[in-house]
Image (cartoon, rainbow, N blue to C red; front, side):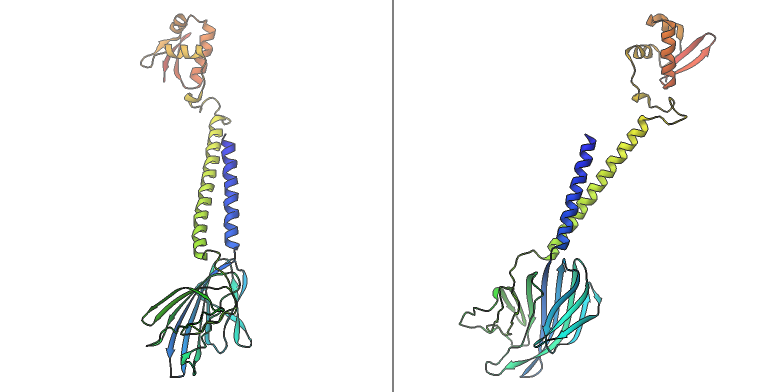
Length: 318
């Protein structure tokens, strides 16, 4: 029965380990962009951008585009400043972030300038790029200049992102999108073209991370239980097998099984006072040889105390 329990716990441990490895290697990312816009003149604005990306299941290089002309670029992985490479393409820079392993937080900070659309009188060159196709969630938080507001359009935009949350509070605009295809959105105060499109499918990595913690705790509990069971089994084996040189002397009396005759003799021996072995022979009506053999066993296993007295023995229960 105990072997079956231990085997079941080992099977559960293997299953939990497999599940945790699967979660660690599932590629997904949770992306939050914070953009602080400062209007430097009637024609130009400065954008200070922070891409905060919680990425899971990516090992090695992580590529992400940012607007062409960006400067003051810094990248941090889990809070540590790191070097990076980049490619200068037609209208954006492709950053190559290295040393990504497992669940990581990547912060990309940069600054770039945008200019106003003269015809419509609103800034139009704000570009936000999302990571590769395993992106599961994207959120944008914008802090706009004094007097800024969201520009609306009477025509629905078939190519724009599907906005499922849009909130304004003073200078702050919070927007959340489900990205479906290559899109262009002129109906916001800042134009946000997305060059890659994705649907919301996987939960954010932080939720997976919490689940991993639970799995790790369960695995630790299973390991402790298995160790405890093995320890108990070892203790029982040692107690049931007398060691060399102590055979017959360190047995626990309560672990020794007595026969009916042995129990009868034991019950005839008092605890409070000594009795002569000849008296036990008379009361039990057993032969002297049989009583002597039983007394020897009871003495060997510490059930009774025996004091020789001439050709007889004085007996008393321990």
